[in-house]
Amino acid sequence: GGIEMPEAAKMVLLQEQKFKTYNHELSYFLKEYRRVTQLVKPILSNLLKPHIENLEFKMRPGMVTLTWTSMNIEAYLEDVWKELDKLEQLVLTVNDLMDNRIDAN
Image (cartoon, rainbow, N blue to C red):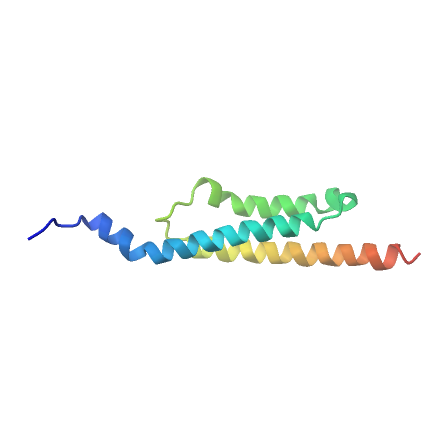
């Protein structure tokens, strides 16, 4: 015989790779979030604040309600990545305007 493994333990083992992937992607996302927010020039922080707060609002479920067994982690990740990409494009555009238009005058 041997000891029968509980169903819950079997489920965790089956999903271990998926959980590791989520963990890796969430860690990478946070690294990218820090990188993008550090691109914000101090003079522009008030201008970009609502956009950063919007991203942080979208990130909130990951800090509050999502668990490893949540069925909607993929949708959450897709959502926060899309929002981070939008913020990065905005930051790069605004930085470019500052660097090229204003400094040129």
